[in-house]
Amino acid sequence: MSEVKIRPAVVADAKSIMTLVNELAVQQVMLPRSPASVIENIRDFVIAEVDGQFAGCGALAITWTDIAEVRSLAVAPAMQRHGIGRKLVDALVQDAKRLGIPRLFAFTYVPDFFAKMGFTHCQHEDLPHKVFNDCMHCPKFSACDEIAMTRVLDAKASPAKLFGKPQRAIPLPQRTPQFTPPEPTRKA
Ligand SMILES: CC(C)(COP(=O)(O)OP(=O)(O)OC[C@H]1O[C@@H](n2cnc3c(N)ncnc32)[C@H](O)[C@@H]1OP(=O)(O)O)[C@@H](O)C(=O)NCCC(=O)NCCS
Image (cartoon, rainbow, N blue to C red; front, side, top):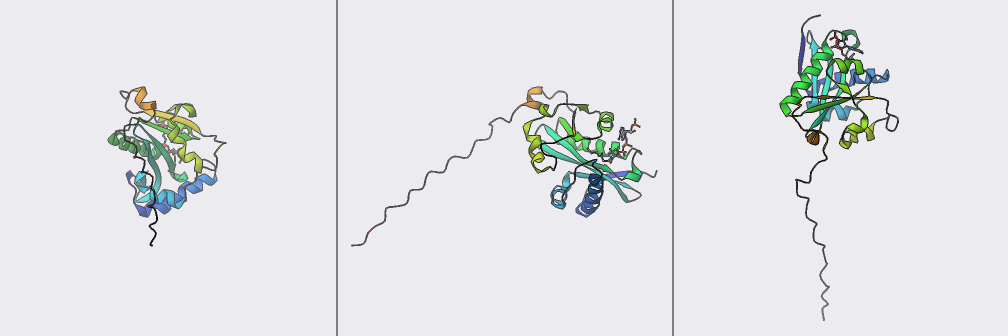
């Protein structure tokens, strides 16, 4: 196979991403993505190209300060098993490190692939609640059969930081004083 190039996505890639991801979603090997969710989150994506042609994609979706999701990872069927998936994950890992994110997770049907990428199995309950926000939009809500996997990038990040609940560091907005309408003034 010719050289594989990994690059950040641009909006012109949205159609190729959607076509590949949704073709694979029809085969029930990954979850579908809507046009809006791809376009709005295009900066999350990296693209694999072979001879200038789209060959695959993957996204890093930041969940919170200490955790991000590897999602929508897909390689064109004809190009699979040539190391492209690994290159995409490596690029997403580099991006997570650049951003200072100490831990990744993925929900997947291919745990053996993710195990090769350094991920280990975890229980869904081990992940912070916030990671399940997107589940509300998932057709498999309440019947999730994906396997949760996680990879620690920065072992020095303390478990308290990794799993801790957000602290109330940001002052909450003050309650607006209740508006009392002025007494109507009667004209004599
Ligand atoms: C999963 C997927 C992204 C892997 O991409 P790929 O380019 O085929 O993977 P690579 O060639 O980089 O493989 C890297 C390693 O993982 C192994 N591997 C790849 N797919 C595997 C699988 N389905 N099961 C077990 N091992 C797998 C390879 O043998 C290779 O191992 P090695 O380094 O010991 O040789 C790709 O098969 C795909 O798009 N599948 C359909 C969509 C999907 O399931 N996406 C994941 C959504 S979470």
